[in-house]
Length: 135
Image 1: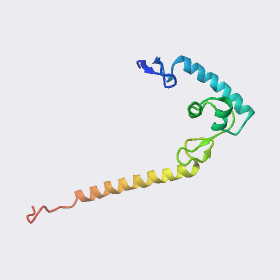
Image 2: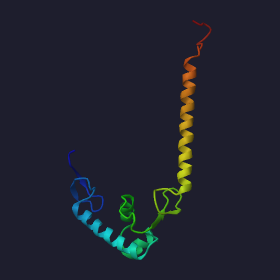
Image 3: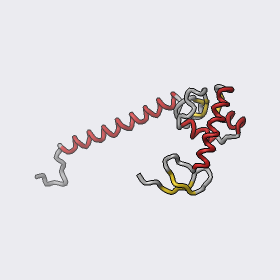
Image 4: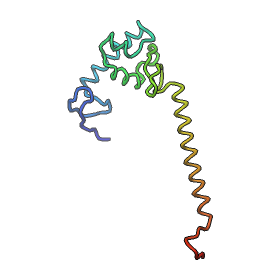
């Protein structure tokens, strides 16, 4: 795999991406931010991302990125909004209700696709007329 030159999503500086997704300066800063957030969570379990941002000054976007990367597992509960409805959750991207609704939607769509496939298979076996002459 070849390393690619990219712009850092945090500071915009050009860097060679080795898999971290950001330049070495921003990566170092994010590691320091992680230590700050972990320390904050030890002292304030059950905090929301907004509370962490307000008390530490670390961007909510940065906290969410670290959270999705699994950096705070076992370091205290963090509440953040469900990406679909905004209900406060402690894990995953969606609350239980939205997860169930999304799974039901996927199943419904899958069933509809399978029904169409079955209808096409049935139609292939039926002789269709294209006018008054049949062969």
